[in-house]
Image (cartoon, rainbow, N blue to C red; front, side, top):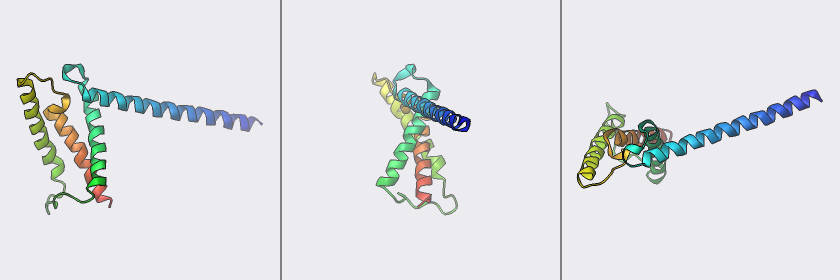
Length: 135
């Protein structure tokens, strides 16, 4: 009887801890996504960066489903070179877009910065690389 009660108690405690951990992760995920979509200085840059990584990874996985083959053939000697060059180029382009938005009176999100664009593009490219190499 005691074994049954201990097993029941541990089961309930384990389930509660699992549910708490899951809800905590979901809350953190929603918070990071919210910060990544905020405008201007009101966003926490670290939470926004994590949110941009999450969104980029999800977009990368969705593009694997929509485009199940590589868009370009990889360079023979540097097969993962796009994991470095594409985020740098995207970050530079998003920085230029953010500057353009500010000049025209807009308040761009953190995605329209070099680091925001680069983080998003890196997560997207990494998710595609992992997904496509698994096939």
